[in-house]
Every structure is written in C-alpha cells, then in structure tokens.
Image (cartoon, rainbow, N blue to C red; front, side, top):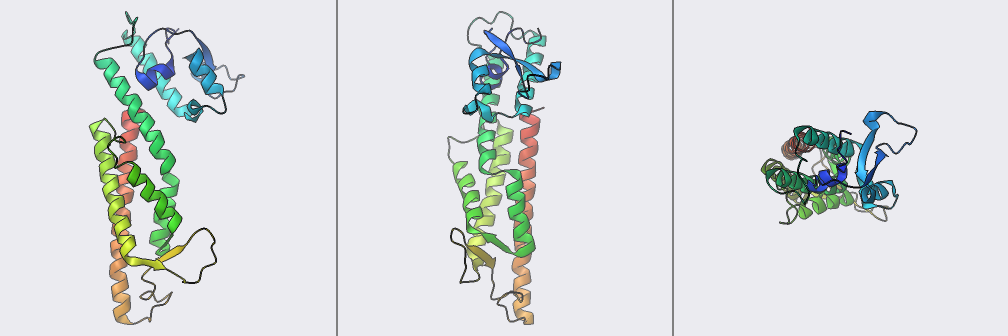
Amino acid sequence: MESARRCALCFGFDGDLQRKKGQIAHIDQNSSNADAANLVYICLEHHDEYDSKTSQVKGITEVELQSYKARLTAAIARGDHLGVSAPQSGAIAKENAIRGHDERLFRQADELLQERFLQEFLNQLQSDDSYWISSASRIDTFRGTFTETGNQFIDTGLSEKLRLLIEGLDALLVFLARTFFVYPEQQHHADDTRLCMFPELNVDRAGPGTAESMRKYDKFQAELDKLSGDVRAAYDQYRLAVKHYLYL
C-alpha cells in the first residue's frame, strides 16, 4: 500500500507519519468511483469527519486532499515513515507542520477574499468608477484580519507576498476614502450604499463637463487604475506563491 497505513490528512495537517487505523476513502465521495487516483487512506477519525456534512474538515477541497496524498506518497517512497513510532520530530516534522499551518491560514484567507469577488470589485472600480460599501467592508475585514500577528504565514515567501497584497489594499482603500462619495444621494438600497468617484467632476454624473473638471477627473482616474492594477498584480503573485509552496 503506497500510504503504508499513514493518514493523508494527519500528514497534511500536522506532518504526522505515525501508522493509524483507518479506511480507504473516495476523494470525490463517490463510492462507485474506484479509480486508484480517487482513493486515499485516512484514519478513522478523519474519515468520519470528511464524510460528515457538518464537519470543519468537510471544507477541504478535493484538490487539497489530492495534494496531501501526493506529498504523503512521496514521503513514504523516501522512507520518511520508517522507525516513526511517536509524534514525528526533526526537520521533516517541522516542515510539514509549517506547511499545514500555512495551508489552513490560506483556506481562511480564501474564505474572506475569494479571487472572483476581488476581480469583480476591481472591474467595477475601473469600468464604472464606483463601488458598494459592503464590498469595501469585506476587503477591509480581510486586510484587518491578516495584519494581526497571529494570522501570518510562517513561510517567509508567502508572508512577503501577503504583506505586499495588504499594502496594495491599504493604498487602494485610502484612495477610495478620499475620492469616492455617496451618489446619488437619494438611494433605494435598504442594506447597501453606492459610492462614486468625484461625481461633481464626472460629466456622466454631476460634473459640468468643463475642460478643467475633466482634466482633474482624468488625473484621479489614472491614479485609480494604477492602484487597482497594483492590487491585481500583488494578488496574482500571492496566489502563485501559494500554488507553488502548498500544492506543487
């Protein structure tokens, strides 16, 4: 057995290479799919949690479980499990524990700021020069959460990419606070509010359409495009670093 009765989730979360009583689980949770690539050995406790609809472990994706399985298989092939009868110690255990911590932190971050949401937010900013307060609040929650000392990646590469992303979001949020205002003032949205960039300068909103007002507006629009582009680039680099460190 390629897992040598080591649990893929115990290994992925904590670097634990102890032998465990367990079962073969279906990664896609389709019991009729008995393809070898869809099968993984996990301990009884994690098997119950993985199959439970209410479990926190249920939040793990199939891709993540596949990555744990692949890393475990590689560790077994190297013989890392030989002689392990107590909680693993040394460089291998430390590396796997760090990886498990950072992967859990990434999943937490991804729940707060999903890629599609951020891209849609930036697209609206750049195409319409407007945003909704609820969207900005969600981004502010993300940056606030991951500026806390306890919510930092241990891997220095990931930590640096996250820092650059936070800096980009900070700069963008400060710009929005300075240049965006409620427009129109009378809105019919019970649970949200739309803000627009200097509506008194925008000829398509409340602007007079003079050359001076349009010149000023173009200047702010160029700054908005730069800040939005900086955030896009920082987020792309952050996700690329996560992919290479955690899943390759």
